[in-house]
Image 1 (spheres, rainbow, N blue to C red):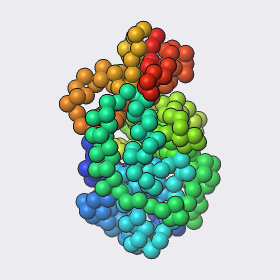
Image 2 (spheres, rainbow, N blue to C red):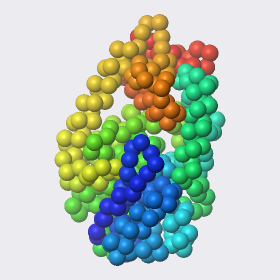
Image 3 (cartoon, rainbow, N blue to C red):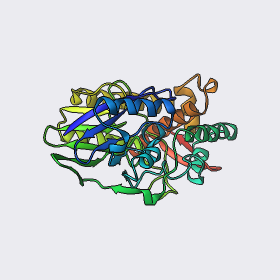
Image 4 (cartoon, helix red, strand yellow):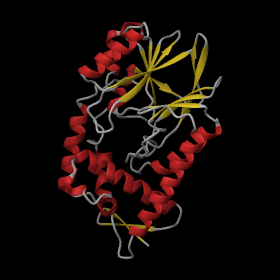
Length: 319
């Protein structure tokens, strides 16, 4: 079983995205890249170099459903004649306008995000959706934690690694402990724990950073020898990355707790202190900033380091 990285351009600040061709029977593509002509052309060229065509793809596996990872899924499915698309049941970005539904709006209100900024974020979400196409639930099959995706010469085990998104999944080749991790493990970037409704109870908030730390530890238990990420170079020393990530989280956590006053602050207040130029940035950066602030505040609260109360629909954190 050969796992072949193919790097595609994206229109997003994160830069190019890595998708992975599993050159075995059935031919499988892990993630697809965004829906742009440039990404599709780069995908065709990467497949050509590996002696394949889009038509040869029989299966698509999505690590998660951000547009840079899933945007071309419907295009490929159509061109390759209704290939199977596998995605975890907790992912919803491919099914609806992420960020436009009431669940997301309620989370932003609770975070203290001003109405005018929420309007900018809504516009950002609509713009991002242009780089993906909505799939029907009937088009997708569920990825289940622990199941094996079978190939002629081996298998990839599904490892549910929530954090970056609720339904993020990694794929483990146990024979040599190779992992395809999507955006759960990136060599030069600390993945952002994205603000999301809880997939089990959408009235609640998904505890992204807490889940992410558990996912990192779970991957560590497999002692991976090689980790292919969604962006940048592969990781050959997972222990170093794991320790760096945990150290970064704890340092950021201490900084966030230090910004919480006795008088009380919102997540939006904390985001502005973490990123002093926030007012000069656009919607996507506003959303990522408040996502990071909320994630760290949730973790600090769950560990008993700060308190929170609801006041006029907003969560107020205090020491």
